[in-house]
Figure 1: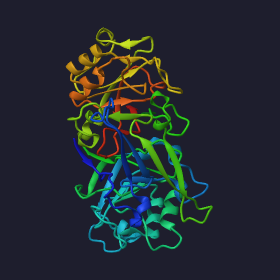
Figure 2: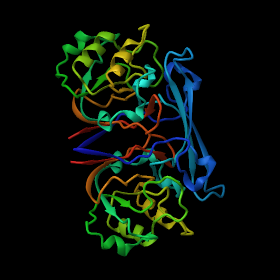
Figure 3: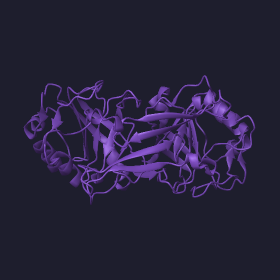
Figure 4: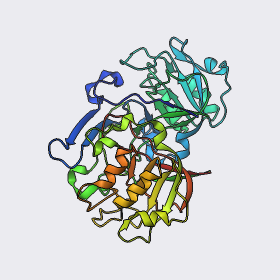
Amino acid sequence: MKLYDLSPEINEEMAVYRDKPENKPRVRVVATIKKGGIANESRFDLYAHTGSHVDAPLHFLDDGVAIDRLGLDRFMGKAVVLDFTKVKNAITKNILRNSKIKIQKNDIVLLKTRNNPIKTYDYKFVFLEKSGAKYLASKKVKAVGLDSLSIERDQHDYSTHKILLKNNMPIFEGLDLSKVKQGNYLFYGFPLKIKAEGSPVRAVLVKE
Amino acid sequence: MKLYDLSPEINEEMAVYRDKPENKPRVRVVATIKKGGIANESRFDLYAHTGSHVDAPLHFLDDGVAIDRLGLDRFMGKAVVLDFTKVKNAITKNILRNSKIKIQKNDIVLLKTRNNPIKTYDYKFVFLEKSGAKYLASKKVKAVGLDSLSIERDQHDYSTHKILLKNNMPIFEGLDLSKVKQGNYLFYGFPLKIKAEGSPVRAVLVKE
């Protein structure tokens, strides 16, 4: 069994969505043994969409459920990593259709692109086009993930997010897929249990 | 396959260690669709030891590693839930030795006690006594977890934490084991990847 860590380290220097300072994590040490505390203790102030994270329907749909209301089985299971590192702009229905590995119902579909690994925020990241989102929804996959900090750009109505989230498919963003080859795996990426539109996750792939 | 969610919801009303206000989580909505935002967005300000969480060696040992330096395999694998709900005060070596299910090397050992579920902070929670910690270390278990917000009380030198952490055994605290019976399972409880002495986790048991 081999484990792959898909999460970048959370720290104040990491890339954040649209480079906005208000999206940065803040890590604070609140007690230390050196200064007489009984233990070392910290607090973390995290944007819900920090590093590797998951979006819930509520992120883009006011009548959508929060991340604590999706079944745990949505965040684990059979996964397929598709290598689209040669795609320059967007992943479309046709590109997905022509992938060498077949996408199955209930797969967690992970899109590996040239975005990966994310060191700085790239405004022209490779994204999942609306046609691709519709295709994945029609295939009844369980969840979709990729290696950029958002799953779409330059679609004025945020249709990729909305198509997936209307189908209660969690969207994993900010995954580091650079060490993982195209193929089949098991995925684990459980959110914190919190009534909110998303959560940071520690995302892990297992090759048995 | 049956999944058990071991995590209480993170919210501002939840029980926190020693009832201290500075240990409370703070959940802030920072953008809403209703007020003209493109999405609903939140930030979470979390004590590292909020709800179901894991302690790293650095929590009690200045030369111990942070949670991001422990191998991912420490946070998943074969688990044994031991029912000690009849124990009134402390789990000792003798109590562990006499448990009906044998503790094996590399098990993640989960101690179910009368603490469970945690609604308010109980200053007289059932804890793992030093002798029990030594016993589990000698058995070379992978990790230890339980249902109180700390694994020990009233031991002036914090020896239970130190014995386990010196052996690089993660300590899971604040687990809700109320729905789980004594027996063998698979456990998943990955921390956020952050250079700190601990992390909140979403903890899950699987019965196959």
